[in-house]
Image (cartoon, rainbow, N blue to C red; front, top):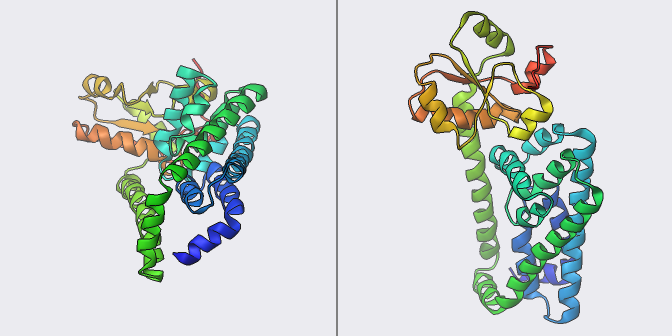
Length: 309
């Protein structure tokens, strides 16, 4: 741990800049914790505090502008790529869109403090065609608040953090190993949650051709659209599909309890959002519910009809 402290004191600013930049573009890194720790082991004066906030804010803003530009240029396809490195992408896309719908551009200052959502927010802002001026204003405010809170916590609890580091230092390399193991276990736990869900529904997924056959022969087939409302409006939907979200799950369960065939689709890698909703619907009694392999993207690539109203 002493080596870690020396490393932070020597290269702290570059570490803060790099880790905030990497976190803002989607990597699951503990930037907030690193900021607190860096502040706690840095000599406390106005200059050091200002430089830490500047370095962290700059890293965050650069990452945000990269994602904003990508969202504006490539649209929702960028979300799929971020989903592959995010720990919890399925709820993030929907929640980010919902917050923007409710609060508009100022939502950027709220979302910055919510893990997962903070990464997708710049992309969604670009997809929503938020003006560059508004995005710059509220992203800057969000970055300064986020970094400022972390630095303030590090300054306020510097004695407690120093005591903790001293305690770990007594165990030498074992103390540092303990911290690394805890973080690794956290990432492993999140990954296992997602892997188990994907594996459970992998064998139940059906292809676009399977769905077309079901549509032709099943008069009571129900197709559920698990994407956020804005994606359904902007990118279209499978004709006849019904939007589903957390608030409508119970109503859909009551309305379609007797249906033998339920198909659900989304626009995430591995159909993770569709799988989560399928799991919840199974708990309330649905026995035959299957995610669509490839989701709406596979349906569109096959040349099938896309509805918009």
